[in-house]
Image (cartoon, rainbow, N blue to C red; front, side, top):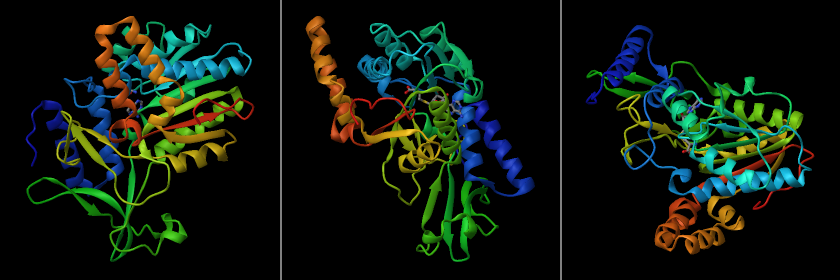
Length: 355
Ligand code: SAH
């Protein structure tokens, strides 16, 4: 059993244990969804002091280049009226603040709509972007005006469903408890063969298929907005551009990988984003898919090296830190290859830089 260090962890682990004792194993998706809701509700997990660090927290250049990309597209689309900046899971609000500052230099001052579930993070976001309005999902974001949408490390936090090929056929991966009360993976009782696409049903024993229904649903809705209202979206996350099999679930606490089942609500649970599926969903709704490219190549195409040089000339004492930030964001062994940038636009919108 894990060592529950705080009351909130005890209560989420305990309520899972009670639920499992009463009704049997719960789905991995439910375990992940409720764990992350608890995890983000109560803390700011970002930065050196927290559990993990994200691109906008590494350097202001990241948000600025995203703002520049959106402004460039908006200008070439003919500067349509009443633009809306919409960000999903904005963390500390750093990316929004940096992107909005860059957009303003090009005469783009959109209304700001943030989709965030965590009370603690909303408070930080409002400090960074005082004019922001908050939403719990996309449904309440205004319907008039083009949407300029950004999601960085948001989709990886959404719950995944896993199906595993067992000796008894395909079963959903569930979470139960062992004799000592520790959480363990178990196979669901219901046959799930019908949920597996026909060509993959014959896969080897032990094969795991992971899907993220919540991510597909959000991209479906976002793409619908791009088609109806015009605009563009950038989805940035770690993941794979081609379909794959296997579990990618992992947990990070204090910058280290830990057992994802050990302490629900106390570690950040993530899974790789399946960009190929999200691109299919967006196209099926009529949005234009610009491409899915490695973050390093995309940032270089937007001129991150020149931007770092310009900032270093202005503040030579920060030159080394700026060059290190460029390397972290773009280096092959760092975030440059593992992280991908997917671009989407409305059907009539121009092509974007870097795809
Ligand atoms: N984009 C930020 C933060 C990434 S962490 C950055 O790059 O630094 C994930 C963010 O998504 C947090 O803000 C978290 O509270 C939010 N989030 C996670 N699941 C969510 C959900 N289901 N609905 C809304 N926000 C969610």
